[in-house]
Length: 328
Ligand SMILES: NC(=O)c1ccc[n+]([C@@H]2O[C@H](COP(=O)([O-])OP(=O)(O)OC[C@H]3O[C@@H](n4cnc5c(N)ncnc54)[C@H](O)[C@@H]3O)[C@@H](O)[C@H]2O)c1
Ligand SMILES: N[C@H](C(=O)O)[C@H](O)COP(=O)(O)O
Image (cartoon, rainbow, N blue to C red; front, side, top):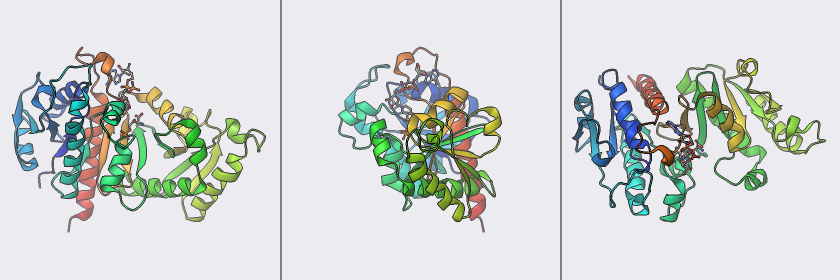
């Protein structure tokens, strides 16, 4: 059976998404996975494109041209210069991709990066895709952000909030709920029978026995005990400064971190061009490159497509694995 195509959203049209999409199509056109762009043909002027009316037409066209399900831009495309007038198309592409995934017409949603402040200025209420997707396709719990590259998976328990707010909002219950979602996803989608989780401490030296803050004793440690009581292999709180060394990384399958940059600095430093952002805890599969819109290099031919290619490949693998699981 031919796999379902992947829906790739336009992202911020003034960013590098069009360039990396075209480069990814060139890299994957023979091997797959087949995907189509929900976007405007002006985004990809350097590759052959073909307009499709439905996802079902994408696979047959993919080897010879990049299939595009058209969503025209309201304002002319100027690379490096986002126009809020295009925000409805950017948001609409995400909504359309999710609807197609919920209807079982695409295998997964892959998102190109959005320029968050531009969407916010246009009235978008969500700080990122993760939170928006939680609203569109949540599965009863919170959406969970996991970034993955060969040899490292990280999960920021608090995501797109100011650091002061992250510290205020962190609770034992959040860590436990996300730990459960991560363990279940690693079993289901990543083939790990008994995933090993580590939990970062919040404070320097994981609080140094309470002498550098009591959060690790009062918030983080009880979460680890609860996860262990639920049969999940979890340990910590670990001092965050040493838990990403090669030796330490060999001892776990995913690291839960207490705030955004604690998780994302190590993985982007290790593998900016190969890391993939996966949203767990949804009713659909969603992946994304780990980088942003890179407005500073848009239109210069410098954008590395590696992370988008990795995101498309991982989405294809996850979709194939779920299709096998649900086959009679
Ligand atoms: N999934 C997403 O939608 C997503 C992810 C991350 C950031 N963003 C958004 O992107 C915007 C810009 O964010 P930022 O500047 O912090 O990060 P960024 O990843 O866009 O850029 C950081 C630096 O890395 C470079 N870079 C990024 N991707 C590259 C690539 N593929 N090839 C070569 N160089 C690359 C850029 O030129 C820049 O110098 C913000 O609005 C942010 O919120 C969106
Ligand atoms: N926090 C992510 C990062 O820095 O890479 C990024 O902003 C993506 O978030 P969404 O997938 O929620 O848009």
